[in-house]
Length: 319
Image (cartoon, rainbow, N blue to C red; front, side, top):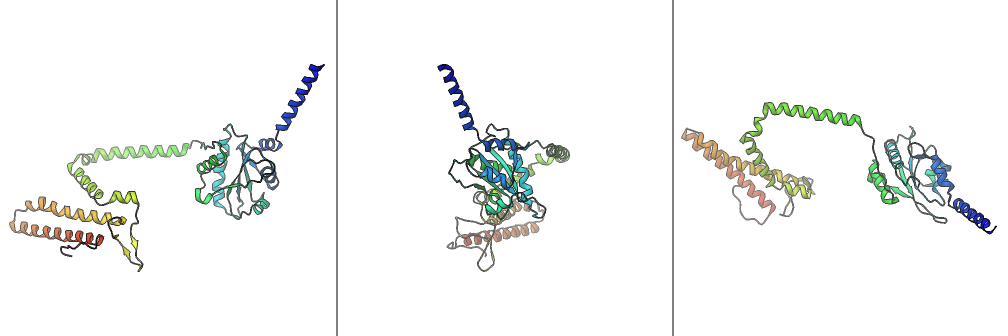
């Protein structure tokens, strides 16, 4: 009899422990989750699941999808949020974090209660014990965007669960990209067949090398690293194209400097290649004076630009 009584007591204790651990709110939430992993909420169900004791996390999307509101962000965010909820159903923690959706037409009282004057809103309600009153955590839609990946990253950080997004394979997009790739390959093959000799001509590589040198010696990489303004307006409303000082420059400066270097190189190239081809001595002499004059003028422009960068520079050539 003592053994039977002990077994009966253990059975009662076990049953009591099971009922003590049961959570009617969580069980109800589990039963309300639809095939998309969402719980459709209204004012009453929102109060029930978002307030009081809860041993689960609740993420709620609040929207205004009615045509009278004309809320384009709501229509854009709604499928993204559904994608997150549906993806999370594959997670082993899908009984500890739930995704709810409350539209303004079903929960106007909740919008007023939470003092929400705009939509959409993504709110996370963390678990809380009896007597606690934790504030919800809001996802900043304006700052972080409406895409599912950004929201999933936010939820992963706040909930501690691995919230990931698994987008369905887009066959239409893949087909379009494949078509474009095949078309591009066909065009390249046609171009190469008829104009391939250009890629092997020494003039092509000479021009490409000179352009690369001009770009890299004009401060292009400094612009890429520092990201300066292209031009700078002055207080009088005029546009400043040159920044004073050696430690800074404007974006357009590299283009000006490379153009000057290019003109100087062209002058020298003309003196070396073009002038000797003239058989007439008079034309040859005139070409020499012309290109030397162009070189001196462009070089004086370079010195003037240098003086703008460094006002203490004492030298100049023509201007």
